[in-house]
Length: 519
Image (cartoon, rainbow, N blue to C red; front, side):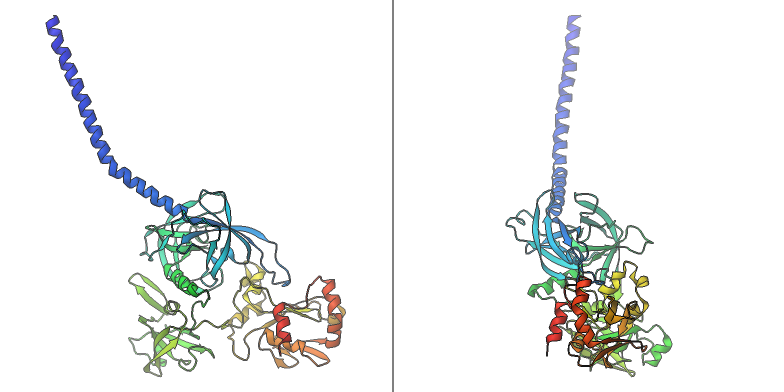
């Protein structure tokens, strides 16, 4: 019995040993097989950490001027945004993140310390800004992110930022759905923008949109129409590059405007009337501004059919690629000041060419000056009447629904062209009630067209006429014939008491005081 027992024990021992050996071999192969995958996982994690470290949280204290009482500031408010580290020890963010900011701080990922920051360059037009931190060592452990190329539609993208509601970095994913011209909410410019379906929330502003570790956009705004959810817009690489190039000399030249306005030519009858053949498309020139690059070379009723290498379609669009079309204005936006822009146009049935020099846009081609930031509002108080220039800052003071709540006369003025004879409108905004202005206490928000019968060119001209007045009375009149008459001697005599009564520090802004003193 014993001799029969030992062989069975030996067999089981051999099987056990073989099992252990096979398990060791399998474990060894598993370890070798998992090695590359594990290394790849670590590499991906390292790349993710590098991107995370390069995304900065920005804190600001902002105090905007009150354009209803332009000698005051609105209550300061605390806000935050996001940014990304780029070459040159700079942080790329939105202009609206730092607009009207009196104090800026930057905070690194997983670092509780806040560092004092300052603005290096700002393009309100493109809603982009560059800030930096002077504290030694802030950028030492941060890897600058490179600027990539705009991907094709339906490409998955990642949005990095610090949205409100938490302190940690947030990463959301979405799809690039389309790219086209959009009105930038910050300053109202009409530039190329990308649209994504990732959630964009307050605090995300200025954060990078990432594909393959490169910045392909800067988050700027969420959909505000109320009909769509999880739609956001970003500044695309072409606009970012334009601003970075513009920033090289420290002077903001912005995006050029050649100085003409157009309308589309969808109508076959209109095409024929302006000399286009059946296979030609373009846009009709309806206005050419004096002192602009187009003056003397482009004329009203010309049809622009081509800009540089871009043919213009009947709806005013150009084709950037097989899957991308946008407004022809983008062909001009690609240029910097001083560069030539080639145009082909049809004039009275004949094809002609023109080469215009891209120049910095005039202050405003509309009688309503565009929105301005980081500036002190202009005003003059005369006879207790507060006069201000009409601009979008004032119109937007009526709130988010300003397009409906602002006075109709002020809104309508946005469609009027400027000219050398009249480049700015003056508004009698409100009356600080006093004896000198009896009878006008309820007058407000009306546009002044003439002073003592003289047309007003701009606000500086208006201020100078008041300062140099030698008539007994000053008569303000609008285009409908309504008049406000203020006795000049009484206006001067009551000025100090009116300012004291309404706690106004000065009868005019610094700019207007300088304009009035100029010869």
